[in-house]
Amino acid sequence: MITDVFCKILKGELKADVVYKDNDFWVVKDINPQAPIHLLIIPVKHFTSLEDFMEGDNNGLLGKGLVVAHKVAHQAGIAEKGYRLIINEGEHGGKMVPHLHIHLLGGKRLGPKLVK
Image (cartoon, rainbow, N blue to C red):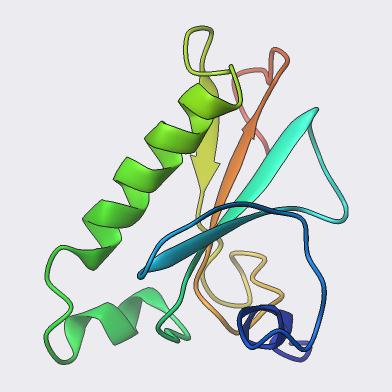
């Protein structure tokens, strides 16, 4: 896994194209987009994995991330035709940054599956 660039973005150490932020989530444009719209929904509180949400009092935070995704999909103009949400988890899931995040992709027909 590579360095946690998302923590650096949240701390202001790296620049990012931020399209939304609140106390719990930031949404930034992916620097290597896989679709015309490719946004990353990043929790401000550091979670390495989905497993981290099971520890402590994080009830509802992951659900709020989905609400944020829906909101920014509307802001980006892709909600009506549809979009895809992806969470890559673990080595076999393709996770490359050790900070849980949700990919929001849209702006074109994405097809029925992502993996060949």
